[in-house]
Image (cartoon, rainbow, N blue to C red):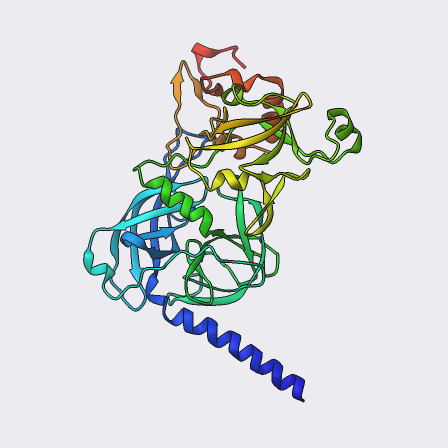
Length: 403
């Protein structure tokens, strides 16, 4: 009986702490109403389709609304509402990072911010910390509150952009409409923005952590979004004993550079072994120690802006050297486009358009094999112009015989 009583008391304390923080923050959350237009890359000549959707957002510093990029992707008209206020306020998109699935909205009417509270970012988060998610999921117009704990902090692929960035996994319920809503710690500070969940999985949701949000906000300070460092250079783990012996690693840890992008050729070479980044030792599995535990070494670059530099300690030709490496904006040959109308030209019944990942994603699974083959067989890092394809042939006398 004593143990059961103690258990109930512990639960009460945890729940009370979470609810007190939440009660102070409901006036920091907004519902976002988006009218967007989406075009078909497979049939770019067709008229765009209009969709209406809703999401969530958090009011942060400078009177900006932070939300997910996919909530306002392709938006033609955006409105926001506050809890217990039926009035809709017109909002405009100020900055967007599809890579990090983040966006900043602006509301022109000062009256909108009356009675609201700005959320503060906090990077203090660890495994098993309590978390409260606020937002407007499907099934009602009132604000929803779900609670849970931090399950994992690790690198994960972002569904919206396919970028590989740091994420926080939580077990609080996340549903459609929660996207862009704040995830708060027990003190009511913002530790992340709700991003995605795994369908048919129980209590597995992901938020964009505050460290990624902070980098996005700093990126926007100059009025232009450069994004996070990225290129086509390839890194391979070194876990094979024979490989270690071949390169003479002995007691060293590190990862192997197997392909060097054109942008990196003045700084890196194939068969370089990256031993550390800014003094952080890189393990053979590509991870470094951080305040979040062991994470992929790219995390160090994600805390800096494009144009800044890090110092690589490199094992090259069995000698240890230091290389100053400049962070760069990624320039993949095949892009995934966001919020753009597909471009095409029809000449003699022949439809030409740029080859994009958007187009490939609308085809069958065989298109993915084509994409991989294209990267493998072409020296894509040496091409500076986009690839243009003959997409469709409309039957006509002028192009008879063309296949």
